[in-house]
Image (cartoon, rainbow, N blue to C red; front, side, top):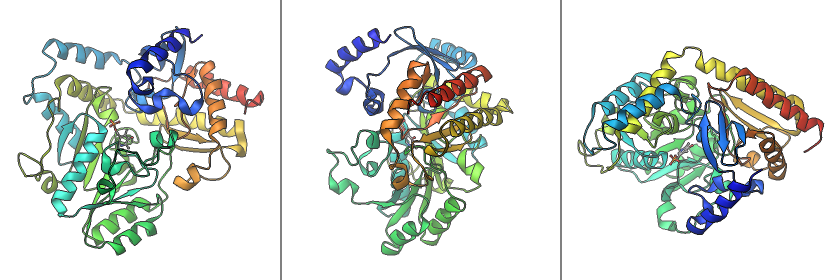
Length: 426
Ligand SMILES: *Cc1c(COP(=O)(O)O)cnc(C)c1O
């Protein structure tokens, strides 16, 4: 059933570390070989052995419209005919910037980059340049890409592979990274009291989605806004996942909290490698060539990537019922999972993002997330995969729904989950 995938994995391991180009793809945490993907369309993804799956990974978030949306593909094909990259300004960059500003008004100015990692790294440089301070506060279990200074208590991939801190990152590079506890504003206040004049910014995933999905408790994001203001530090929302997913205006619209800087990735590129950072004008005007904070990119604002991003955001804007529809599907799934497993699981859900934690009790932070039974998750994952349901191969990654998931997809998934519970697989 998986022969071709297995063979490709063996061959790939010869030339790429672990056979993959991003660690979680190797399926280590679920004790099996990965499936190699041949194609995808709508809510389905197809592997090289001809197996079809209902996809709840959606490329880790970008696929909010499902795979290969006709309008996006057509726009990209047209753009390709005009050349793949110029390394010179284009109208597309302006159009995307204007659209992002319209949907997220706190982003008065932005810079396009190629990955979420780059967006966060650059936003922090701008925050340090603007404030003249070196330290930053991040939260245990939040992931902000793999740049040196942020690979501290970083959740997801690092969590899955049990590499909390990576060799190759000099201690000197992380000494300015202070770690607070998610949903615990007192832990943030304590760090500021100890370092009142040296913290440039608080960076947070407004909804944590890299230790599994963990919702901010009421008032938490507001408290961060207040603490940042009190100490003249900046508040950075890492909306690489939540941007254009939680709502059109992201978590900042959903929770009505305005950050100074925002990082975007995943959906903003419509499936192409594109990300962005931006925010208050006076901060972004620090960035070169307007200002002196240096940051650049050969392929930044690439015409194909911006085309996919613009088309995706336009569709999200046009489809008035999109967010309610996806959220309703996710709610239906969440209810069925809770019914199937009862108090043996904790289901966290917001909008089209959800996680099933294999443990009793609430998951509100890193400490409660890591209590989960990863062995049970692996059994759940494997059963689902064999039934044609493609989930994230880790307890600590979110489940993503798309607008392409049909009623039949959701019902089929619910049936498999109920069957699994009935057969006492876990
Ligand atoms: C995925 C992610 C990143 C990193 O983005 P890449 O494009 O993988 O570099 C940063 N922050 C958050 C919240 C993410 O989920």
